[in-house]
Length: 153
Image (cartoon, rainbow, N blue to C red):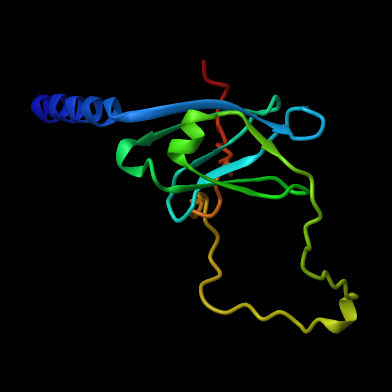
């Protein structure tokens, strides 16, 4: 077991050593104000991040992905497409405000809905498992843990 743990540690060390870090800031092109919670993701890969409240972000990638396309997007702004190499050379990204056409939303009263039928197993579970898909970059999953006794230290 110790050998396996040691091998896994060195393997992770070697893999992480090849990572190329990028840190930068996303701002409004007109005002220069930072944009919070901007989505930054490599198109078609499970790699990305979200900027913080001050528009700052950090992203690490492997060198073999340097020519992959990164999409920087924020609601109400035109998305920008860059390669990871371009983003590494110029980590400050300015987004231009622009109208974004959203799909139509239809609100209907309760009377138009049919009765719901439950099919399958209706048993209750004390635990649950939550997952995110690759498309949910920046999402967070939380789990409530109920303590049956006094609080732990």
